[in-house]
Length: 263
Image (cartoon, helix red, strand yellow):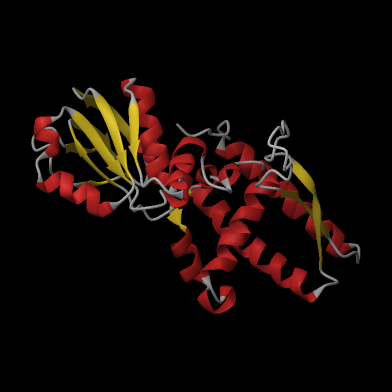
């Protein structure tokens, strides 16, 4: 359901990281203040006519970071610290959450949003998605129904008890062996609705897979849903409230979040 950028190989990212840091070191060695250009994106359409054919995902100018500005110097410091952690994750073929990264230097980062912004900046600079950096979200999604799969060598068999709730895999790229006898996928907005369906033995009476992101879906939930649709070739239906909030969640499943380029 959600668009996804083409995959980037770890070796390519490591090369880009080396080139980026080399340029910064060369500037500092020559007594120059490094200039880091970061594309800025507009995540909405500004055409009030309703007939816009523009692409809001295209760059709308550049933001220039320099050590000559205190706030920029602080932002570059955080960016380089996070970039070093990302480089280690790629070299060691490990994954880490944004929260893990924050707790590596909590006194320096001060708050989680600082790390989040640095990761977004790195994604833009390296022209990749966040999961290409081996940085994952802590999963919030839940799944139940007529489904089985293997994650990191561990088998998850929902079919034995289709009304048993399982967490959505965080490392979606490690999910293998997907099999199902379901007829469709049902995505529900609210966890309360999901739990009511489980309590009412909904999947016993209906051969389906039910997924919830507990409100706004995180990246693992959206990627797992996309994987199910691609591998099982099943139709997917979404049950949300008939209000702006519900339609926003529906479009997030369908097209991605407002920062979908970085997802």
